[in-house]
Length: 129
Image (tube, rainbow, N blue to C red; front, side, top):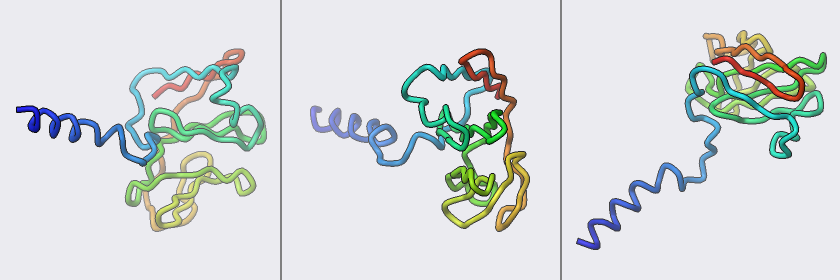
């Protein structure tokens, strides 16, 4: 009995215990709030920075605005990174590139990224997903 219970606990732990980033989890439906005063979001305070949050990549653009896209390449579901120097999102798996409007710049992806509305209210980002 104890062996069976232990096996169930180990299996249940795998999704949360893996080394994979939680950044590819599905985006929450509704609104997502980010308090820019929270130190864990410090990397998006300066223009060019980006974070992974609730299945999205959220980037601070050079013009002071923010963009949020689904963190899943439309080609094969790979993780995305934001490259502020080129102003694009890059898939780390197969090299697809997308502009800040989510449009494909370079394949192998053929479909655009899902882009979420981002509203800035004081020191908070409100992302409508």
